[in-house]
Length: 313
Image (cartoon, rainbow, N blue to C red):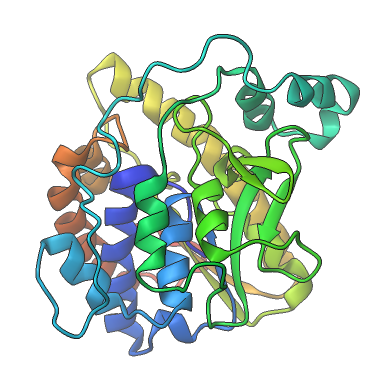
């Protein structure tokens, strides 16, 4: 499972994927199911389309791989920068607010906040073009169990596109929807509904694997941590506080999955990674440092830990 985390989360996850592949000697794309949320949905889509981790790593490092797809996406530019454009005035989703009022137990706190935030103006067209490089328009990934998690903007309901019973979508549109951070990017229309970032429901949606009765699930979650640094800035302290809240949700999901008999291996940024990440997961200036740090810390954590929950760093 590949979790939400913005530009820097994607860089950290690619480093962790490379470490995981090296340590276990298997391709992550060979997993029985690939589940991606937000930035993780882009990586899950690439793996589901047969793109190897080495290609993702080369792309992050600016290395041209002659055998790789024609990927024109520039992670330092096409993400739109470290700050969002000025959003549209007013509440983003009045229906979403009404859904929260009517059934508050059905909507996560982040989902409720997403509805209240003004609607973003940012464009995810570069992400769509990125997915087009590995998947024909209108098609889905070749891997039969590639799931992309988004949230219905007007109901707060979580949707795993690609799973049996989910609304029909192209891979391109599903990934764009999963990446549509509320208040930052415009929601993505699919089948007459509007969708936003699946991270508003859960950083990884780990609980989705419960019915699958898997032997093991490996979770790479750049928004959650089991060990922390000690930032001195106000922004850094606020980010770590938010991170602890998100981590608590993920650990709750992990305990449920583990109780059902599935081994859960959880990897997230540790103190050294967090120092590289800083306080803004969308800041592309830190991307190269985050990638190289993750390659080292993730490998170290995987080597050192035999426990079901492991933290990088």
